[in-house]
Amino acid sequence: MPDDVPSAIDRTTAADAGLEQNGHSPAHLAHLAHSAYHESAEPIRPDLIRCWWTHISSGGHGVSRILPDNCADLIVRDDGVAWLVGAATTADVFATSGPSTLRAIRIAPVALGVVTGLDAAEIVDRRVGFDDVFARSLSTALAEAIWLDDRAAVRRLLADSEGDRALAEGYRILERRPGADIDLVAEHAGHSARNFRRLMRRSTGLAPKLIQRVSRFRSFVDAAEGAGRARSLAELACEAGYADQAHLTRECSSLSGLAPRALLAERRLAAAAAADAADVVGPESLTTVPAPPG
Figure (cartoon, rainbow, N blue to C red):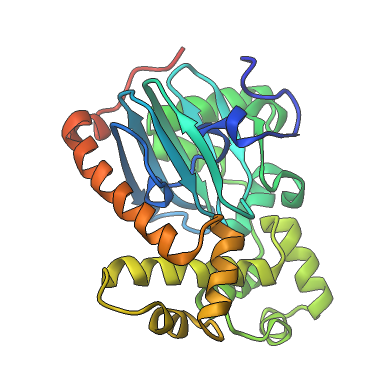
């Protein structure tokens, strides 16, 4: 295995890992020079796969900020390196340089444990090579299928994975209703509150409360970007379910590393950079199936 992916579960720093540590959508990035990103939802096995994505960087230097999104990814790079990324609990900020292409699948949060066979809590804020997650034959076949965008093959390779549907429904409630009472959500899912918290951490890597915090924060970011500068932070905080603007500021600082105004300003710059990058990379690069890596 190449040196830049650990041979065992290992915590990595943002500077060491770069985009490869988390690999989450560049819609969550502050800035990445000359890059383009495309994703598409999974229509057949959404219980296992949330989406398929491709990220192409043609080079240049930039600084990126990846925000938490409750998700994990299976990523393959153009040199054949393949790794799993666990869910993140705070923003990852790092410098980037050099050209690269990544292809990946974003795992449905509750399916992470059954897809990998791991306790998802062990890989929060971490990455691990495919060979340390899957049997060698499955590791090789899965990396090749992801890189070639062979979706039927990926579904076939993961076909034996079957998650807890009641737990998945509980997760959906947490994500859509960040203010919901966790004990009531657990009851709805058919679990005791204690067992629900244990199973959710094992399946997603995250405690139910953190899932709600991240979901509320993502709602704020999406609403703020949709509204532009037309609405006040106090209004956006109320709409997202925060007690007040001060509550929003504390949560934004904790999850992104920036105060709300600074984060939104940074992301406006990112959007402008992404528009320029699309002209450099070209949309056709995102739809062409590449040759096998390595």
